[in-house]
Amino acid sequence: MADGTTDKNRKEIQGIVCRYLSSDGNVKERCINVKGIDDRSAKGIFKFIKEALVQFNISVDGLVSQSFDGASVMSGDYGGLQRLISDFCDRNVLYVHCFLHKIHLVVSFLMQNLDEVKEYFDTTAALYKFFKKSAVLELYNGTALKRLIETRWSGHFESTSHVHKNYGDLIQALMVASKNKKLSGEDRAQATGLLSLMEDNEDHVFVFITCMLMDVLKPIDIVVKQLQSPDENLISALHVVNAVKDDIKSKRENNTSNEKVKKMVDDFLESVRITSTDGVQVQRRPTRNTAVPSRFDDFLITDRIPSANNSRTNCQIFVECLDLLDAEFLRRFSEENIALWEAMLALSPSSDNYLDYNALIPLFEYAVNIPVIRDFYQKEKLSREDLEAECRIFSRVFKDKEWPKNAADKVDLSEVANIVIKEHQKGAPVLSSLYKVAITAGFTSTRVECVFSSLTRVDSPQRRSMKTEREANLAYLSFESEVLINDITFDDFYKAWNLKPRALSL
Image (cartoon, rainbow, N blue to C red; front, side, top):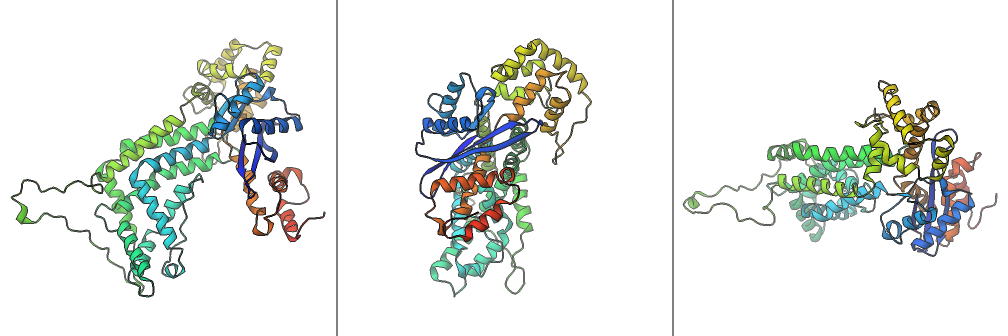
């Protein structure tokens, strides 16, 4: 798993993490190098990775997969990093476009292609900026709003959830600000404008978009948190992604009637209580009366002329939102390797195709091309027939077995693999090898980004002159501190180092 970032000196820092099955049968992840590089091309990054593998004497004969982001320099089919690594190994090495990057692209696609959502986040950005003013902040009793950071996995959800949670306090503060003579005329006018955008609309579009985004982004946020767990594996990751896809389809089928959408908005508005400074509840401003005057009864046309603001109902917006998400999830997670992924899912006791021989064939064909597994099969004289026999026998053996479950009360795939590998290695050598491939395959490069997160701790204003090499070494040390240092923690090291103006002597 590899990824890069740019430091304060505008130099590329590249990191590489290896996911492997240890001798005790547990999956572990170790950062093997963090380094500043001058060549950002696929060849430059490939050189960095090859040097790191040589340094730790890691053979590519056991390389199961590679996981990067979707940039062309990494994912290109001809000159990209994943192609260079496959060519170097002289075989096809499974490339997995980081699942978290894919999910982020799905959400970003929605934000860019639904006008009402784009306008919503423009409004939330204006709210964040307005409530940063100290004079306005004094009128506000809610929690601090979150600025939308589009590069963060959960950026859209966090920004929306803070508006959702503080809607009543925001409206109350804007009502007070719009009439507060202590504020400038410009600030009062801006408060009035924001109040109008958030409340003065008969369809309550702003409230609806807030509720809709909370409804669709919350499950995605749960998946994002799950995928960031170091104990996650590709099989389980595929399960949670499929779960959120099914959830979107279920919403599309069951929750998009006009009545349900209206109830969602009404229930939210009913839960919001706005009080004045003296503790008296403020009555919500009534919506504008749209009844047609009686003097127009004889006219042929009495309906409103459609406009950009009223041409679509909230229900129609909700339907388009779900359709966009469904189509983009399908596109992003059904591009390639679908047969191999479905074969890995067949190793899960939760699958309808659990230990189905025909479903596992693509995984067997992939595994047999990995040199260490191919050598093992040849040595033990194992073939497809052995896999078929193992599936037939162990599907009966495991039929009623109670498998360990995780905190979410789901079958723990890592534990399943661990049991099969440790307890049934001799009886099911082929199945054991397939489990090894499946649980070590990478599905996200987020662990490399965890290495980079430590850079913000040392890249303080007082340390602007620090060289990239030292930054990279500290990032490596922070990630591997539990393994490399027994007597002190990285926090202790950082505090001691930070006290020294130039260098630390140990």
